[in-house]
Each structure stands twice: as C-alpha cells, then as structure tokens.
Image (cartoon, rainbow, N blue to C red; front, side):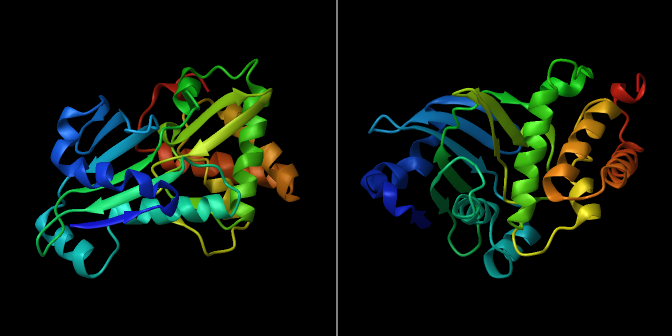
Length: 244
C-alpha cells in the first residue's frame, strides 16, 4: 500500500492510513456507482471528501501499476497544480494506492468543498436571471485556460459554484482527466463547453464572455462553441435539443 500525504495534513496520518480498513463504516455516502464517495469528519474536525476508486479491470491494473499513473494519484497531483496556478479546486489531503503487486482499490482524500451548487441546475434550459453566473463561469474558465489548465470532462457535475461574500466562486472537480501543459487557443478553448447541459443561449452567453476575457472574436467563439455542442450531443439525445 502506498500513501502520499500533503505535509499540511501530516497530523492526520494515522487516520488517513486507516481509511482503507474503515471506509465502508465512516461518514455519509453521497455517490455510489462504480466508485463511491463519502463525506467524513476527520478526527480534527476537518470535513473531508473521500473517493474510493474501484479496482480496475485486469489489463488496466497492469497499466496503472507499470505504465500510467492511477486516477487517485493524477487527481491529487492535478489539484496541487491547479492551486499553484491560482485555479480553485478542493484542497488535496492525500491519496492511497492499495494492492500487492498490481493496483487494486485506491483512495483520494480532499477537503470538502463549501460550494453547494453545480451546473446540472442549468439542465432545465432556464438562463434568465442567471446570466451573471454564466459570465463569471466563463471568466473562471478563461483564467484556467490561460494557466494551461484544460479539463477533459468539463461536464455539469464536475463544476461546483456558489456565491461567497458577494462573488460567484467556482471549483472544478473530478480532475484526474486534465491536461496542464499545452497552450489553449480559441478553437480548443471554446470547445471545452460542449458537454454542458442547457439551451443554445447558455453557450452563447458563456462564449461571448469567454471571448472578451481572452481577447478573442465574439462571433467566432460563439460559432465554435455551438458547433462543438452540436457535435458532442448529436448522438447523445437530451431534452434541451427539443426546445432550442
């Protein structure tokens, strides 16, 4: 078993190391599919989110053991990179890799986010009265792209937001699939919004503000954003295409 702990949370080492043995009996389950997520209160009172990654299939176990970093490790290291570059995401506490020889289960431990909303709420197609949220989100994304941060699964459940001290704040989560080293131009940047649920006007508002934040042409950004949206959802039916 391998454990990597953020030095800031070294005082929690004993508890962190016990997680694989007591995970199933601690805290509250908030997601339970192939992977499971629990909200747990650490011994020092810190509210943490613990994600257990299910044991991969055999070939993936070989890959994650010898050729590619496991998801928990990637998410932990990506979180450190985001925070270093000024992009908000829940603070990483530790990751644990289990297995004798080949990788079995793994765990990612982060601070629990204080942001309570996510972009699924735009799935009803209503943007009226929420334009300021979308514009602030576009600026957050523009800052991430300027910092060479590109989330490969920028979908509604992976974008948290809330109003904090009068300002709209955002955090990206589920960040094991992330690139952090390439320049992000207009076409790639505007295509990053394709997975968002919502009517076309949601994408138009975001693309316009994104263009302004990065000094791109508004019309071109909107055109690219709508085309990327249409291509992504063409074979993934969703009700919002009925009332565009």
